Length: 301
Image (cartoon, rainbow, N blue to C red; front, side):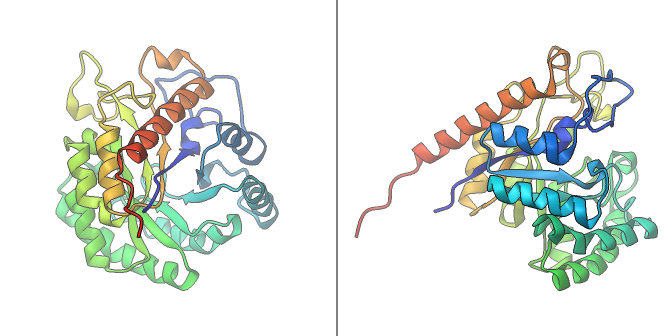
């Protein structure tokens, strides 16, 4: 019987790594992946971390080795992330595909065998999806061959671009054990899907998550996606995490509920990232505890 884990995606600290949205203020804090993020994750006793490659000061051998050693010492599982913000630009960016292929062999340098990737983004969400799906499949088949050769599993995220059924179409078309899903709970709702139903569609292929909670903003329109559906600490918003955890667990999911925070809503945007992530991890641990306590023990032989 599997046990659902709890983790943190480093994107929750994107302001600390220097990415600040126009709607956000600069916190005046800067972090290093090895010296700041990993120790913070250790302090919260999580099981897994997801490391965004764009936040590495240098993706060279020496820095990656230092990160790998720190993760090994902490006993942390790891996922590497590629493609923020627009990935393969709906399967049309040959340079992005080349960059993805360059990064795949590098995953092992930090001890990761799962790489979260992005095919498109909300930049293209209002364009016809069929051509985007077809073009993305062509590029992702090429990348998956490289992943197979390097023992890496690519995990495509529903990135406010494709619905769960469109992601499922991509996964089934590529038809490789080295191509799976990074399920984002909040992005499902941002595309008007029931997150639990979306999880049910993708759970058999899900190896990683962005466990994001979101609320709605007054005065906006749902079609604004990101702005209308800002994020909040896990447990404060609209997402049924207990339902999603049950669906993933029933499918044999072995990854983590990895908290991800992006554009935070008020009043949480006045708090530090540490406060919001700490609250979220405590809630997700309670979700996992509830899930485990609800399981009927197997009868002894």
